[in-house]
Amino acid sequence: MKPHMICHMICSLDGRILQSRWRPKSYKPGDLFEDLHDRIGGDAWIVGRVTGQEFAKGDRYPETSETFPREPWFATRKADAFGVVLDEQAKIVWGRGDIGGDPIVVVLTEAVSDAHLAGLRADGVSYIFAGSDAIDLRAVPDILNRELGVETLLVEGGGTANGEFLRAGLIDEISMALCPAIDGASGAPSLFHSGEEDADTPAPLTGLTLTHYEVLPGGELWLRYRVENAAG
Image (cartoon, rainbow, N blue to C red):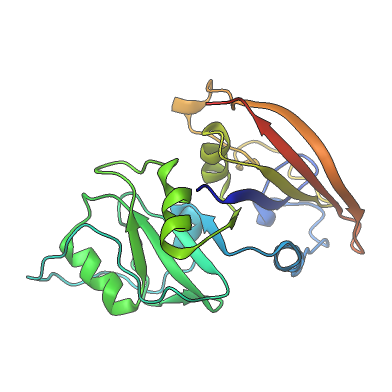
């Protein structure tokens, strides 16, 4: 069963998410993202490889003579929340087993090397498989529900991962805090982004319904929308 999927992000007034480019420099969102994340709740959150790489501490996993079956492996199945990372090409060398206390679960393809799997196990990083040589995005939520009981999954970027989930028709709700800042230039990812190959691919959403709005103490506007997607 697919979990309820909420895309949760904070962005500038022009919809950009790279905070280092926001102006005025005097505006600092602080812990806004995390505070709203906690208010929403959820059994797991998921990000793409670029965002996941920001938390990595290792440089390289050593070679191994061991072999491992291409089946899910979990360091733990019990947690208040799991941190899920898409890593199709198995590039992230973690050097840690959790992010902020949330156990890491990596989404891989079956083309991953045994050395990488050995390294993940040594780091205490759980992993699942969702495709032979490319991640089947639609399969990921169902696997997380089946294996870990995830019923609410927060999709939290970056912009490319958000866009992939949106175009796949998997987003059920959008939570966004519009911040009193502006990027004002090209080159930074938007809330829902795409590469050139997907630039002309429309999302299958058919409706957006505002379900919550709130002016926050820092002048931010928190908006939540229910997403309606085309059937199929």
